[in-house]
Length: 169
Image (cartoon, rainbow, N blue to C red; front, side):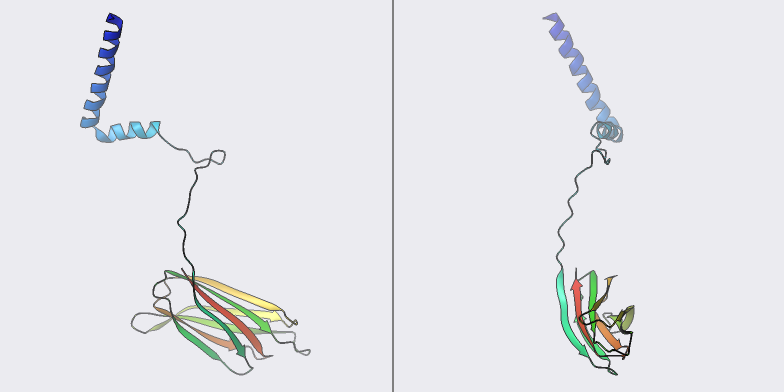
């Protein structure tokens, strides 16, 4: 009985000292607890991470026939509720036996809240003429402004068909 009584007194004294120490030095107490509960992220023992699901929304989805010697302006498309946009264009070139390749240029402009355009990027799809052959180009842009407009200029060796998609996230 005396042994149990002494053991409880020692345990109580240690608990009181721990509480008193935590009151006097809370950062030190936090550091001690943190080292006892530390999680290590290694390749042999990885820490599971789940990312929040982000919703991707189609802002524009167009099919455009581009005859030679024409340009096309598409938009403006409202992207004010997105922090990132992805531009995807797939160009199909018409088949012409005398020409080996052609291109289409996409000038992507953002438009700020005051209506001022600013360049985001210029992408060029260059490809050989294959029956049914396609050439994709794409880009991802942070802070695209309030809206986006696309100016399309064909290389004018043949007629082109462009499938244009703008996704917002």
